[in-house]
Length: 431
Image (cartoon, rainbow, N blue to C red; front, side, top):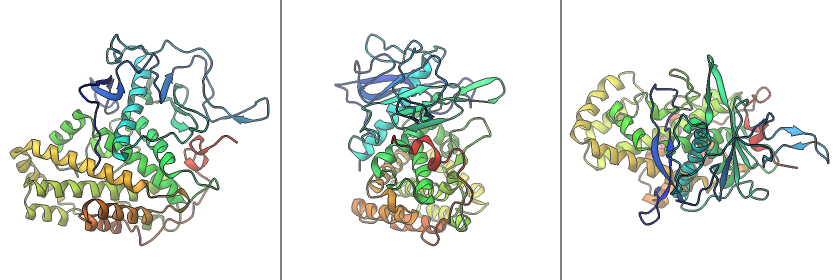
């Protein structure tokens, strides 16, 4: 099993301050000190490194990916930005960036770079290899660009561009400070690199739904590499991961606003007649993966003697019951109090099992033949290869609960939504 490793003691990595969750959710939220894999001294002003660089353009109004006039006719507007830029984030004397305070105008650029690089580090650990950019034929590096006028964050051919939202009164909330958003977009880049793009420029709804689900899982598991997230998660839930908590909320823009929820009850039967939103269509697959994660976590608790077989069986029996929380929370409260460190270890083990499983599963998929049922078959093959099928019943049971393998998504009903990948700059390729 491949796990994410930070840099060795002999070669310390470059340090950044990152917010594990959007800082706008909790007053007084503090960023966490992290290390990315790039050795100290290898990341220059911007920040900029061998694989990506950040710019904060002055006077840029057109987002990347837009179709603009050119000397040879209309074409895609792509990096690099060649105009004026705001003063870049500068490293300290050792090559680190954690000296830059959140109040500093250059903090956004540093946070965007650190979030993107940290996510890629985590997942290259799970893949146990470098992940090349899908746009490598044209660009060696990813341009990370700040564009406040853009009410979106998107990745495309050579760029990851983040704007922000004004939906909360007069307060501007930049997406560059939301780790989930940045990590989700890096997730799309990983999938495009590993699985590829549809050869005919279009694909099934399940391909686009899979993309959203996979990007969500990239962000979810990357966030579990922050010590503060793991500590707060266990402290707040006492190890009961089915409690509504910060782990299963994505890209939150306010206390009660979520884009998607990992712990959901959606099934494929709801989409058999057709679908209108690939984000909604992703939820049965994401829900199945989240349930698999929790079930593996329970298996690790059982293996380490942290819960009894009877308690684990009771949790399975009550999983879809409204009585689950009332009954099981008391069990988890008592068991967690006995060995908090054991629960933390079990959680990290489940995290790394699922991360490795997903990486190996995605390596087996193809953009032109992708289906949720195919994802299940690949996941089962990986489980057989790694553990001899230890989690076969867990995988099959959770996919069946979502009607995956029993029914497929119907056709897309109306025109694609505005943020659909089938009609966005994410899938556009020059020429």
